[in-house]
Image (tube, rainbow, N blue to C red; front, side, top):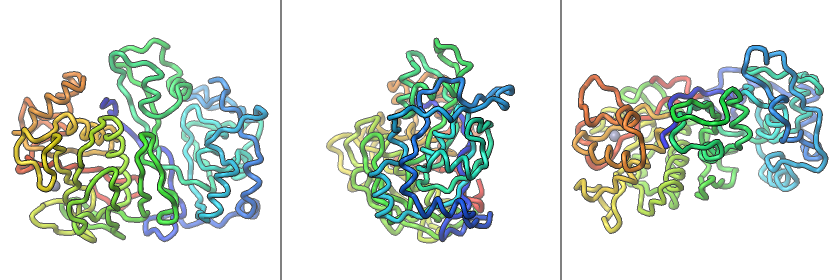
Length: 429
Ligand SMILES: [Zn+2]
C-alpha cells in the first residue's frame, strides 16, 4: 500500500500562469498558426486520435537505442474516439466556461505518443505536431524531450513513482492501484518480465492531484473514488521555510463536507499545492479505508503565514495538523484525549495516503502513540522492513530519520510537513 519510494516531477512547466506571481519565463504570444488554433477550437474534435491500441513497438522506449526510434502516430483507426480526447460535450462545456488556455511545456515520458499528449491537454494531435514542427509520419519523440502545447485542459503535475512489488501483486492490480491502464504500465516497464517478483521495482507515472483547470470558473471534479474535489485557486505559494516563512497570495482551505471539517477557518490558510494535495489525499484515504467518521483539519497557517504561536513552524502553508481519526461513537467536538479513542487503522490509512504521494517530508506523532500506529500498519499488511523505515517505533533514536517521528505534544493529532511544490520557486525545504 505504501509503494511510493521516490519520485521526480516530470511533466509540466507552466509558461503563462494568468495572474500568478510565479512564472519566470516570459509569456509567449501564439504564432499565427497557433492563434488560428485558438480561434477555431471546434475543428479539433473532428480529428481522429491515433489508435490507443498500438503495440509497444510504436511507443517511445527508454533505452539508449530508442532515441532514434520512430513513434508512429500516423495510423488512426476509424471510429475509435478515446474519451480523454475532446468530444462534442467537452467542447461545449469548455466553451461555456471560457477556459483560459495556457502555453505549457510537456516533457515526454517513456511509451508516450503524440496522441497521448494531445489527449492529456485536450488538443488535437495535428496541433501538437504543428506547434513542435514534428513530422507526422515520424515524430521521433525522445524521452525527456520538451514539447510546447497550447493547453485547453491543464492536467495535474505528473510524477514518477518507483513502486516496489509486494507479494500477491499483479500487473492489473498495480495498474488499478494507480489508476492507469495495464498496457501502459507494461510499456513503462517493458524490460520487466511478465512474472512479477516481490521486491522488484516498477516505474509508474501518476497525476499528482485532481485537475483544477481555471480556479473559480471550473466546476467541481470527482475523484476516482467518487468524492467531490473543490477547485483550488492557483497562485498561492510557500515562501521561505516553515519556521521562518510566509505565504504569497494566500488562500483559505475551501469547505468540502464530504471529506473533512475545518476546526478554525482563520487558521486554515495555505497554498495551492498544499490544498490540492490535502483534498486528494483525504479522498484517496476515504476511498481505500471506507472510514465514515469525521476528519478534522486543525492548524495550517494564519492568513499570509508568518509567526503562528504557539507553533514554531506552520509559517509557510505546508504544515497541516489533523486530529487523529476516532472510533465510532467518540465525539469529534474536541481532539481525542485517550489512545483508546483513536481509530488506529484509519490513522495508518490516512498517513499511508499522505506518504503515497511522495510529497511528505515527515509526520509528527508522539512516540507514546507510535506503537498503536505500528501495530495498525502491521494489520494493514505492511512488511516489517517497510514499517521500520516509515515509523520511528520501536527503535527510538534521535539519529533515525523515519517519516513518522516523535515531537512533543502531538498525542491527539498528527502534523504533516509537505515538501515544496514543483512551482514554488521561493519555497525552502
Ligand atoms: Zn503542527
